[in-house]
Image (cartoon, rainbow, N blue to C red; front, side, top):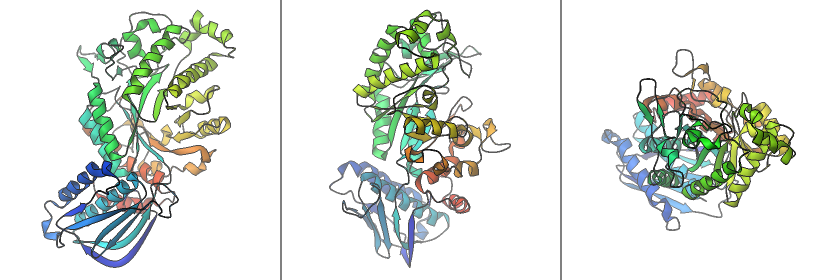
Length: 476
């Protein structure tokens, strides 16, 4: 099983695989009904074509809500498999989801290995970290709702619970705005070298479809709007928000560009306040990511309005100006009840200690030190380890940089400074060189499973992981 459970006690018996395996929704948790129906249908897909193995009668899995279960974690759950059936006890909805995922994997492994039974066992399990994330960039290349749902399906199979949805960058804005129509009418499309127009965006209804699906799976969606850098798609739509307005185009190249939002203009803050108001209504979840990475100060240093902000707010330099801007965004989003995430560059200047930093640069050791010094919680996603657009090995697809399966698996959050502030792990999948769904999932699997296991179980077992990965088969 992946992630590897905390405790498994083999009881020495066998439960014959049944013709039907149905979980019954607890009366106290009607919101689990759709997930349970999905589990029931999933079992039938697993056993299709293997009916000769199905010797047992139909079995109903008993799901018992036990708020008083002795638990060290809110998502702790216990699975009892005996000769007569399966019983699950859990404290939370996600506890039941994770238990059913484990049962699905056990059944899949049994069928894959030609067995007609499950071993009787007692399994106690819970995650090490509450934040177990996967990132998806839909700006560099756009992926429709069905692909995003498939991405969420994969996350569910790996017990990953936070989708970081990168929805804006220099190469495209991906949300229909009812307040600022040019964002999607202009900012969602770029002109390619062959003269064709590339892009797309999600309607509000499509975004709600994704959010509803994620909620059914117990996954939190974190939208990211990158600010103040990586904003050429915004500037192509509203060039007056730049330090030096001109006819900007949605970028066709990859990289870092000097033209970013002008934070010296009051109208920039006003624009963002209105935009964030619309987006926070569309995304009702707990978190909002404001980017903050790779924002060159070239234009700010040339801009009288930005330069005047240094004296006005008694700022030491232009990095501190980004810190001021970041704190302004935090104020706006806090008023809307959001917790703010940002890339670790925001820690390079004085910022609000409530910000959750995504520690990504290099091995993220220095970023963890900065977070610890300022008291910021952080999520580890070091690019030298957890960037899944990097190649998995020599001759493998992806960027020229390499992060192997074993390299991902060996990440150790406890080795970082301020480990008590670490909320968990995240793998990032940037799509500059990922143009279709097949390549997307090729880069994703199986390294995302390695990260999922390390975020769940603190005790490494790489050799065992490889064996379990082979038994489980391709879950994409």
